[in-house]
Length: 199
Image 1: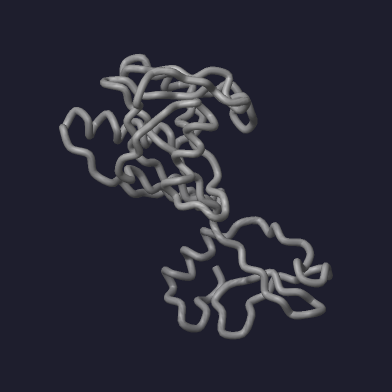
Image 2: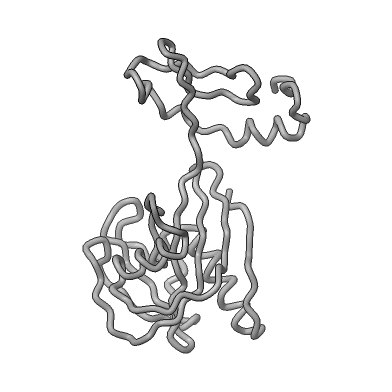
């Protein structure tokens, strides 16, 4: 392992190395010239730096937002009509758009994917998916009725009790963790915010 950079502890350097993602930026967004990955002055990690105009391009995690929509003892799941994980079940969720809050994005995704009317509740899970460069945030939500009108990204949307969840057919680990936390908290009679890392 490389020695820790100035101002970065050994454990922090190890964390930065573990968090390294493939280099995704190829050309400068300002002038179009090919970039070079290097550590700019006064920085602590490699960045995409334009070889012509010296513009530094920062890459930040993508935010995924969604909900755990509930109707009594049941939760709403959507069967994916898109890749990745076509045909697998998921909570309604997707990428946060520019100009919207995480709450607004979670509500929008629920409408787009399930055609569900909800009352948004508290933030429920905050899950770091470092290897994918993503942060997943799920809110609890109360379904206002059971009328569903799934959008084109969803094959079908259905309500499931805990013992009916297709656990082996869930699309993503963040969905499984969120559902596990949800049913455990429901049994306890108290919902709290859960945060963690998904390897």
